[in-house]
Image 1 (cartoon, rainbow, N blue to C red):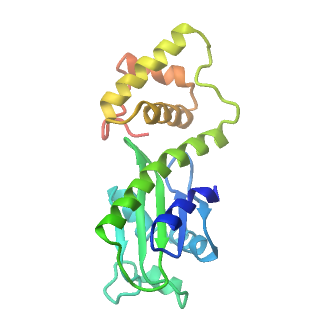
Image 2: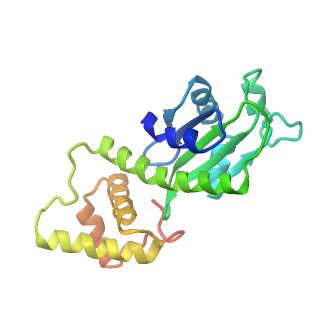
Image 3: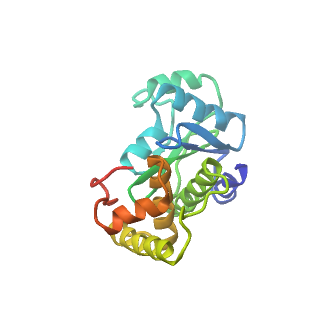
Length: 214
């Protein structure tokens, strides 16, 4: 998945990029790193259970750290673990779709610094696109050859289509993203997409934020 990191390097003034999944049902692991140091930053944060990527995902807000070694920094253990590595600024962006948390993007520079307002907007836009690709690839890897319906037929397709429309209304996302959320819920529950769709249509399951977490 190294191609997922490349757009960030092409569009932003950063030295390295990494992407990690950090939430169930996909576990916690780095799935993309542009270089050794980017991979190391992800590894440290996953091992320590703290850092910008965790804060970004938990708050669903970008965390832009202009100098990772500031004395008053909120992650002194992480700063110590980084040691003498040439890392200045660290920018973390959350990956999520609707109510589904996925992971985070980490970007680093060699010297302390910040992103301009325009660059920050570009970073957010890129992370939004990356979230969709990360989830799609994670689902395809977890369910090779899987189909949307365990019982093919017009009724199943209609049911999934109806549930997708309800998820769009609940979460305010696109049809493509709504179907991805349905697939993720089905995978997490060990059920078929049709079964999850049936629960949504019959209003036994609400995927809106805070109502029923994945």
